[in-house]
Length: 240
Ligand code: ADP
Ligand code: ADP
Image (tube, rainbow, N blue to C red; front, side, top):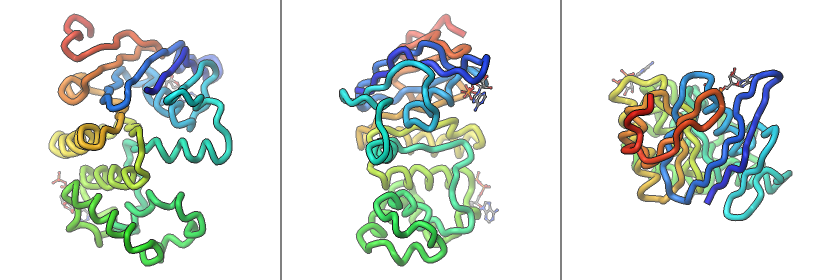
């Protein structure tokens, strides 16, 4: 269970998120929807502490996430995979190495050696990365430079990289906003797969209600930083 308790974040005079309370059982796939500026990104970024809350608490399985410091905070971030609208791959590196980047926190000594990184990972981690790629139909792309892939392929590489951290929670911040409908579908299918097969809790910011309806068992709608709807897609008839 992930609990957000009265979570708020201000930026100067802007109330980006205001008094959001949510209880998210492990294994849910939650679509967070709302217009641009509604607070979706700020909410997600507070969960892995990329953004600090102004008020409120986050608890995960009884542990107070908002109090974590140092190594405990780094461990928490490892347990929260994150993917972004712009993929955030290392463009000149091959795909397999990009996936192995998800293991870097296990090998702090390898940082700064990105060019020759691949050969320095243990064989079993290289095999694990290849399996992660194969799962998303990308094994054939393993030796290609990341920036030669289509947007949908790059986002699936980012998901494979996040899976290398063996996360409990996956935070997806507008993962399909840069993609055409066909590529968007392959990415949403990949997120659904890790949610269903691995039981990973997925919090996914989405622009389009229709995508959230199709893929998410629960929809949270934000408006000006507040929750204006929280429920199953079927309950969302009159709203919007
Ligand atoms: P969304 O993801 O729904 O588009 P955001 O969480 O990005 O919304 O933004 C919510 C509000 O907070 C917006 O008014 C935005 O301009 C503001 N905001 C977000 N991040 C910052 C920041 N780092 N500095 C100042 N204002 C910010
Ligand atoms: P899709 O057809 O899947 O919507 P694209 O048209 O972007 O996506 O890419 C189709 C294929 O072309 C991809 O599988 C990718 O390998 C290749 N490709 C895309 N962009 C580039 C590029 N800049 N350089 C080389 N190959 C590319």
